[in-house]
Length: 490
Image (tube, rainbow, N blue to C red; front, top):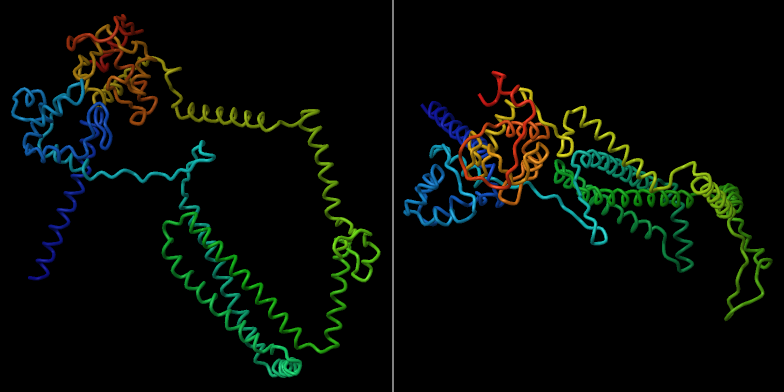
């Protein structure tokens, strides 16, 4: 019995969750079909923003009248029974048109609108207070770099642990203890500090950074595993550098301990090996041995301070000569013969190449239509598509046959912004100050061209009073279009 109840409870919860999800999906679709032409969710447009509107009706204790307002705003306003309707009516000079929706559909729309959340804004900075620079986090690339840095960190930690273990093992050998005891007795006899004490302090301090950095690795990886920012990468990079310095210090320490165990004869051999390195260093720097510095001592002095006339390092001198040669080549290459482009010319060429690439891409994708090259489309398939787009995006303001309601009559010979295809395309794309919203983000260029062409093929319908200037509408091949049985105006 208990298992059956659990099944029923699970089924009920699943049904409720599915209904809520479906309602949110329906609300989004209903908003786009009925409201998005004149309203935006969180910004004012032709109509006011819809987010919070239901609460305004609730605060006015007229929530039940809100449904009447959406279905027939003019009737509710003229009835005089709603104060909220009068406030909404006076928002704009363009009146809201009636919508054929049910109460459930209205609730679905406002559920979607009230629960809508804007996408997170991208951080921006300014260079010299003028040029905006957009900082976009590439989390996929950041996560790849994060794995590399974490791998490097783990490798360094392992190397540090191994090196620390090697040093400790080396210190425990009888031979090292014997050599260190002799060194300690010698230092103690001379009043110096025992080396064993210094070694113990250094080794004790090494365990602290290694442990803390290992803990940082464990916690840091979990915190930024799915969303790694540039700041996280910089932090891990700094930790890697610190780990590398610790490792290098351990290597140097190990070498020092090793030298302490060598006999005087072995130390002489090591010093002879170091002579070769000194010779190479002398060739690179051209320095004078300290015993011969008197030969390059200048005569003048100040307050007992004298100056040595050292030569410039040969690598620096040859580098300076190389810059002179480079400057001559650069001068003739860019300014005398002009065989290569200067920065401005190179930039202009790259911009031109990019524009060609963009044009080719748009041509390939059939999306290279704008207000400068748009043409009237007369094919029935394009016009039928334009009719469907008109029904979805324009009908609520201009009515099904284009006779006008909130927006002007699109079928007469009076036009506010021009009646040619370019003017209609531009108005639909960018919108207009009189309340016409822009559709650039809703429709692609081909769809804008299709709906613009369909509007110019609309037959005259008596409706809203004329607005704008009298301009005779001329549509090429209009007769051919209307003779087609599949035309959009059937």
